[in-house]
Length: 79
Image 1 (cartoon, one colour):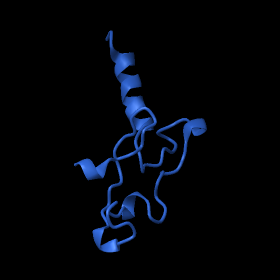
Image 2 (cartoon, rainbow, N blue to C red):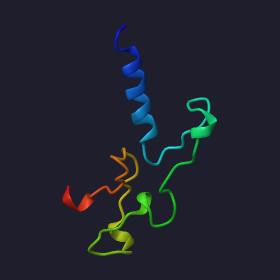
Image 3 (tube, one colour):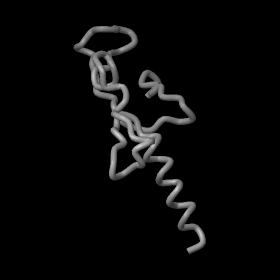
């Protein structure tokens, strides 16, 4: 079909922009493979309120989603 290649590249873009998700073979070319991002201590799986930083009673798991033009902020305080 006319748009098959466009659809393929669009899906590929979403795959590579996904956060907290390892991109590994066989789903990606080895030169583009990497591990999950933002998985360390005090990062996305353990995010605390900006009004009570470090207070683990406010911790939320906010991992996942997609980055937009390199902007990986999640802006949870505006939700």
